[in-house]
Amino acid sequence: RLLFAGLRHLACIWHRPSSLAYVAVISPQDPILLIGSDLTATCTLSPKLGLHASSLYWTLNGARLPSSTYRVLSSDVLSVSLRSLNGSQQQSGDNLVCHGGDGRVLAGSCLYVGTPPEKPVNLTCWSRNTKDLSCRWSLGGLGETHIQTKYTLKYKLRWHEREKECEDYGTGNQRYSCYIPHNIALFTPYEIWVEATNQLGSATSDVTTLDILDVVTTDPPANVQVSRVGDLEDQLTVRWASPPELKDILFKAKYQIRYRLEGSSDWKVVDDVGNLTSCRLAGLQPGTVYFVEVRCNPVGIFGSRKPGIWSEWSHPTAASTPGSERLQTGSCDPKPGEQNSTLRRELKQFFGWVRKHAYGCSGMSIKLYDQWRVWLQKSQRVRNQVGKQNLSLHLLLVNSAKLSSRARSAASVSCAGFLTLPLSGHVVSIFINRERKALS
Image (cartoon, rainbow, N blue to C red; front, side):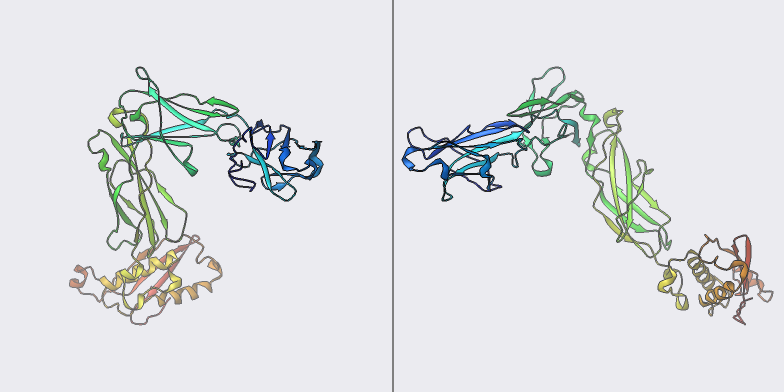
């Protein structure tokens, strides 16, 4: 009697017919075969149907099989021959169905075509905060067996305990994993292995011996905060809290930080944080949003010499570096195209500093640099060098002789001075005169 029939992705579940009343029967019923095997199956009709075997046809997973594979053995028996079978399309088995001429389903059988399992590999385990144990593994050999295969994680204390079976298995992408939620022993090694079994055979992984204290991980650091460092436009400070779940356990944590620009998927990792719970990021771009994450490695739990296991990364925390406009006002506000030039940024910082500390410099602006650049590009010696060098700005301010001693003691300077910029071995000097507002 048919329960589920014929469709390509429908689970294969058939009941064997009663010997007293049946429509038809397929033999062999639910065979288990290795990939590459041949199969000849027969569909035997009940005499009460009044049908002839030549009117029947076969389907496999809903697809009609060619008549060239059929053979009429008698008026009530039709066979089909299948060569070099591929692995089952679904682990519940493939549907082989015998139909009447009108399409009616007369009988069905499940075909299990696959391979015996190979021994599982890459068995890895970890304990979160010493309270539980999680393990995962990979399939050995070619992986998929094409038929239903049971994986059982077993474990025991190394010297004085009978083996136990893990009960909480993952599903979906995590189906090759298992979770032991409690009753974890410390200071005693465990032996752990995985057994794989299906209708074609079985295999067992290598035994892994581990001490729970050597495989401890923890939750990501909590309360991650990212803040600016005053008006420093290329730096941010990151602070976080050590894992509270391990506060009563002797250990030394290691931390890593990673950060990226907003809109970018490329992370930069800071490895040398050590066991500090704060770190200053430097060399950042001004006026830019950064996303920062932190993770923890609990090293040396109760004196363990193993390196520990990194936690997951914390949830990203965002902060922005100050823009250059924070250092100056008025005519020195940055233009959109200026922020990508290191030299222009340094000049704007200089003009902001001079405006804040110098004597009578309210008329200075970044336009002076624009004029200088036009003049510089006219020089054959330095043509095409602007924007291609990593320029360092050197400032030589020449105090005006007219300044009073009081002004000098207040560290004030005039707007008369030189900017010297080394370009490809040449020194170009800019003379800024407050009165003339001209360049030499």
